[in-house]
Image 1 (cartoon, rainbow, N blue to C red):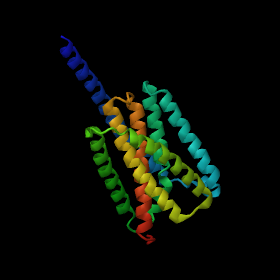
Image 2 (cartoon, rainbow, N blue to C red; image 1 turned 60 degrees about the horizontal axis):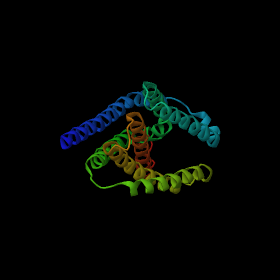
Image 3 (cartoon, helix red, strand yellow; image 1 turned 180 degrees about the vertical axis):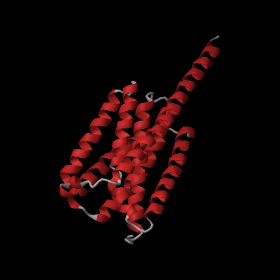
Image 4 (cartoon, rainbow, N blue to C red; image 1 turned 135 degrees about the vertical axis):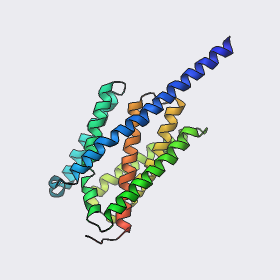
Length: 229
């Protein structure tokens, strides 16, 4: 009887983890809708507060975003968390506005946006598949990511004051690599049972996809030249 009970328990546990993963992907997919709506609105806004006071605007923006993320995590096992997630992704879509405006002023801007989106989708599929299927222990990757996050945040805040274009590209490349690894690590956490909230998992992966897309688009804009419409 004991082996049968153990097998049944393992099967139930596996089903629960797969359910979390399915719900994570479902919430991610739904979160793209308010993101797209927000991005369409953002491309038509002036964002004068970021131009007149970029440092204060950036700090206020970060405070608002991290406040929403904190609220989502506090409600990670409640439907309220999912609704807050939609509000967060709508705001993130609006904040894509300045970057999309820069891209759309270029002759090949729409193409660059499509390439960045396609590359983001491909990287997500590859890294999520690796995370879902790998048998390796990724705890070492987790330690590396914790240190990498601190380095990237310090670099990003420093460049708010320094405003060095080449340094910004280095940061963008770092965020692209960091985000790809986070996707793999987070999916692995869900599959291994280390993450039991699909809302938390979806939030982490969404932010990684967002950062990956914006980082790739920044790099593409920089290397494509400055030909404007």
